[in-house]
Amino acid sequence: MRPASASPRCARAIARHQRRHYGIELDPDREVVVTTGATEGIAAALLGLIDPGDEVVVLEPYYDSYLAMIEMCGAVRRPVTLRAPSFRLDVEALHGAIGPRARAILLNSPHNPTGTVLTIEELQAVAVLAIEHDLIVITDEVYEHLVFDGHQHIPLATLPGMWERTLTLSSAGKSYSFTGWKVGWATGPSALVSAVLAAKQWLTFTSGSPLQPAVAHALDEEPGFPAELARSLQSRRDLLVAGLSAAGLDARVPEGTYFATTDISHPGWSDGREFCLALPERAGVVAIPNRAFYDDRDAGRHLVRWAFCKEPDLISAGVALLASVDLSR
Image 1 (cartoon, rainbow, N blue to C red):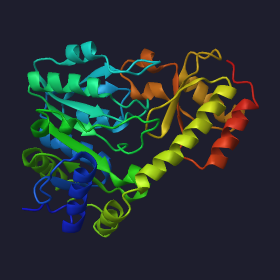
Image 2 (tube, rainbow, N blue to C red):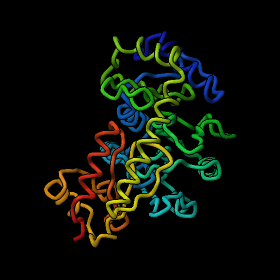
Image 3 (cartoon, rainbow, N blue to C red):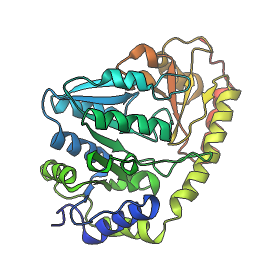
């Protein structure tokens, strides 16, 4: 039976999207749920699949709703830190985070806020551990099409042995710049999708019903738009990263997403929050301290996140302001 949250046209378009891009075959009546953005997808997935006392392994820095929803479920988060400057997955640390009460891994790739795109080797390591410990993996793939420099997003669900234990979340918000529409989806085996639906029906019941036909049209009739958007974002990323470097704020070049990260210890700051609070008065520019996305505050204390999902003229104006002032502590 088709989930009540999804219009037939939208569910079929999502299924066609997964087949076209990844070779994933979905039953749109049983293996697709439309959610109010991926944020509700995360909430419904955790509420539907996680019990109080369960442990959820999550990569940090993490999207802030992860922390809130894990706590709302009465679960325990077990963070695995992607450490600067490379922000690569530490497989040994991932293994060490999986305890006897582990129930799920909550994975985000392409990763916000670091811009890391997990490699096939990193994903295979996740798959090995998920199978060994019989874990569900909830994958947040909202930036799936926004990858740069030839990097490739590979859905974890396509790896051997992972389809039956992977719930995949995504959204039209990032790939089609419909962030305000809040139309996302959860896909996967019917048992996992049914658990999402069981929670979702007590959250919003249905999501953006008048907008779902438009999202279906975008997925079916404008399949090339996300690649064009990624090319545009890559040029804006390059503009931002070059400007930050010119201002004395060397940035790690992100492999995907909307965001770049700088280490603000180079101009003498030890705390990103202090830097970000001083920035508007000094330069008329705002940024986000990464420490807000960490359990291990020391790992993120010296890092700051910048967004390049802006018009090039605005990015140019912002980095010019940064370059025009003294940013040292």
